[in-house]
Length: 211
Image 1 (cartoon, rainbow, N blue to C red):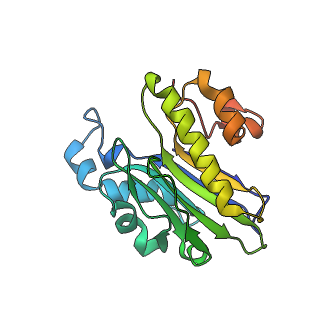
Image 2: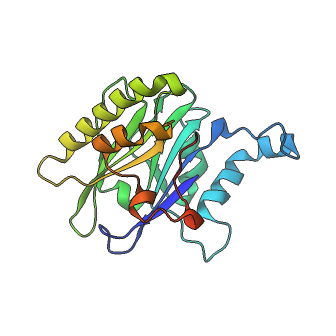
């Protein structure tokens, strides 16, 4: 799970969580497998929102590998979240993008290339800043590098077209399945990773390469 706070385009820090939830299925090595499988929605909700009263819930939740299309909505609707970009099927599970109701009321879905395993929306923030936000689950495996590159090119083009004259403010979330050798090519298209831009502090690593 990755999380970050963006301070430059919101009156208070914009809190974001992105998580590939692996079809909400616990590892077979996990203790109490049956109980954890049954309680997966609650456990995921508590992990993202925090179980303590002092925890500040995120404004945006990007999920990958949801077990079915309405999983995100069913899990977070009582906490005031709305599926803003719709859901789409990826190579494994569904991709979803959830916003707090207050943000969702100022958002609209973005039409994306049908070959993208992504959902996105455009949001008008209270300080008159407009941003495009996406949740993606890109092609898997090492041999999928070329496909991922094309997916990133299409995603960038779609999001920039949605902003028109409103600037170039994009927040790209999800599981990109990238290898470190792909960093430079992808960053030339989408920009530098948020953790790198924040100084690459290994004691506070909120995004990472899987391989």
